Image (cartoon, rainbow, N blue to C red; front, top):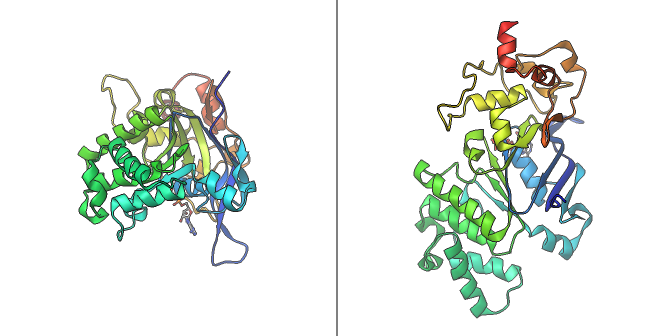
Length: 336
Ligand SMILES: Nc1ncnc2c1ncn2[C@@H]1O[C@H](COP(=O)(O)OP(=O)(O)OP(=O)(O)O)[C@@H](O)[C@H]1O
């Protein structure tokens, strides 16, 4: 039997007020995703598509307009007060900029200790031992506990922020571009840390990134987001080898080939135009205003993700038609 998801997000929408009455920024629109223990799942899409808002809504930093978030089958939005705080603590957010989660007036040790106290660890000795263990777990020497975050390198700061998140025994980590601000040489190390943590702690990780390249090696599955919607979802390898949605194809076209001998249509067209406003998103398929395959019916139908192959779904009706012919949709398009 398939493992039950530790985190289940059902038809979640988050919107923000604009200056105009009755107008909203539809940042996340009817999104459903699932994460299982011990898996890293990528969430990719260009800037402004709603990735952070989705992550922030899952942890309760933004209020959902509609939809449900379940942790181990318990609906978080229904809980109040202490129970809600305790449950929500099991879902931790790792920010791109670790300054956001590290208080510069506290040493790293004090910051982690505070989290341990919130988690209910009363004994001072146990807290001290746990701080050393957590620092070790993220690859930091125990002397770091007496340092302030400004005294650490970017990579060390991110490791310290991760140690703080781990202090409350999370079941899920929402990692929002956690390595984007780091030097290239440090990125791989921190990515490896996430891989180790996933295995050691059996934690589920939602890995938010601009591009598919970063999540390629680490994640087992990927969700592709465009203008508030999930447009394609599937196992990483399958999605890389056989992206169905034209937007995923575009994103993939900017990813360097891991294996240069792999054949892929490299002459993909540039993406035309700018990301439309999430205040008045296009009707039907949201990508249609920039899509090289657009047809009249794309403005009429709001495509539901449909199966491309087991566990792989795409919300593009045109790509699905062409996919049936097992040819690259862009090759088809150019030939037309
Ligand atoms: N507090 C807010 N008030 C109004 N609009 C907001 C707010 N937060 C985000 N938005 C808007 O919601 C949309 C989605 O933003 P979000 O930050 O979630 O995108 P993103 O994909 O995470 O982008 P990035 O990769 O640049 O972080 C954007 O149009 C953004 O301007």
